[in-house]
Image 1 (cartoon, rainbow, N blue to C red):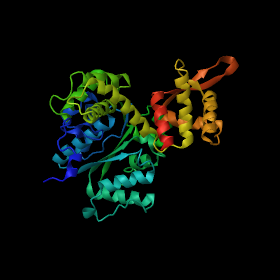
Image 2 (cartoon, one colour):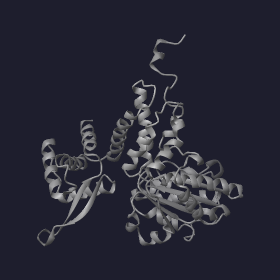
Image 3 (cartoon, rainbow, N blue to C red):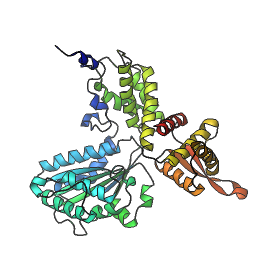
Image 4 (cartoon, rainbow, N blue to C red):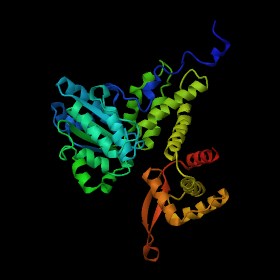
Length: 401
């Protein structure tokens, strides 16, 4: 007999067959990668020498969020390791999320730990406690003792504190740090202008090949979701669900992550409503939830004043919806009022300007230089890229938490 508490849990999921297919970090099988055949072929060509134990090109991949950059880089790396092994070449790849491992020490520790087989090398890579130079020495030993070729993927490379690890990795061979192992670096960035702020020496060695991934169009997004539709049980998705989700995601920068999120959330909403099918109306609700979750993730860990500045811009956008952008001084005036309401001292105008730059770096806002003519000179306008209602809702939740 089952206990009375067991009816709290549903043993059979009426909506999802394999929900993992709709997780963002899920690496799909070859046939499920849609709309990136040309990009995959170009990346493969750039790293092709590695299957013969030769040095692959260093790559820099640009493109907006959700355009398949990380997906294709991981896919190519996995296939390269497989083919190199068939050719008798010992190869491997390491993946670093630079948004999480943003310091040089964190990044090199992650690389060394993921590539190290301590039973073979007798080397320990602790989480912390070693100097950066010691982590590097252990990494070079790990690479030379185990591999002929290694690819290192640095995702969101623009989030690194500095270029030091790029310098070390891209020049390890010529600097004599490695004797037997060849390494290739794949940098991935959402910032098309990221290269402009690179150290010139790093730029010359890292940017051997550059690729730009364009946003997906509605047809490609529909195909991407169709390729993952067996995440749901047969007959659960109403026919209009995927086209509607694709249209919404295409309208908002062709973001495949957002499209997949919307599809997953729509299924969860159907689940919580006790519905037998995923209906089109759930897609609209799911989009709002996806927007809210994405923005919440963007501002996670931000300071109160960073949030007050965003709140000021959201207030202006909601009160004057016909205006596209707002000058720094107008934002500062509203920010001062918010600080008074919160009982907090205000930061200087210069510091608020810096906070606005940080939000622009995260693609929460867009900045543009405007000319006020000979009387005013030039000035900066700031436009919220997120839905101001979503921004206000999340900021209120965050401040109440």
